[in-house]
Amino acid sequence: MKVSITAGLGLFAATVLAHGDHGPEVPADADWATRHMAEEHHIGSFDAGTFFALHDYDSTGNWSPDDVRKTYGLLDESAASIPQSKKDEVVKIVFQLFDKDDNGEISKEEFIESTNNGVKLPDFGTGPGHHGDDEYEYEIHHFEKYHGGDDVKEEDLIHPEDIEHFAKHDRLDAEQDRLEAQEKLTIVEANIPNKFRRNN
Image 1: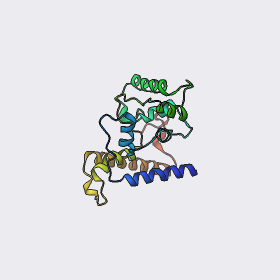
Image 2 (image 1 turned 30 degrees about the vertical axis):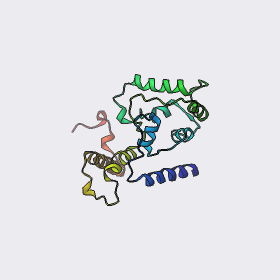
Image 3 (image 1 turned 60 degrees about the horizontal axis):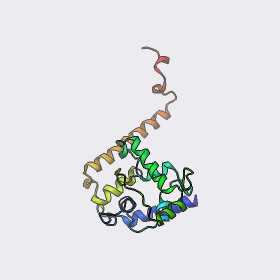
Image 4 (image 1 turned 90 degrees about the vertical axis):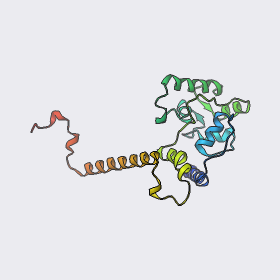
């Protein structure tokens, strides 16, 4: 639990420090990892160990194929149009580059050693690698960019992205209310299959 709290505080501090900032400027010829860190995390300076740890989502000290998929944003709903064959190719190539002992995982040591030897995470043309939840992605890619000041009022949130974001909240809240109302019922008729209902 202590590690989770520490990690959470670190991410909170990074978000607070980045609030109102649109991320560091990166050169047009920057590699994919540098652009990813600037666009997705608002981090302009990092080393291989930091990049690895930030993207070791289950804190095992190794990257699994799912860690690579998530880092490249291939598990995000924005990647739904990317063919599965392309997603598989991304994982295969990254593992060919970094999994030196071919054990199906990329260790932190393998990643650092390969990076120090000039190996870089390729840009597969699949985007910047969205891997935060909806709140994080909305905050970092829209709210901070267009509403980053401290004086934002509800009536300022009129962009299509704002409307979509808050409409989703409304749908989730309505669904939660519906479920809570159902839980209070002794018999939930909606859960009874039609074949067991009386025809009235």
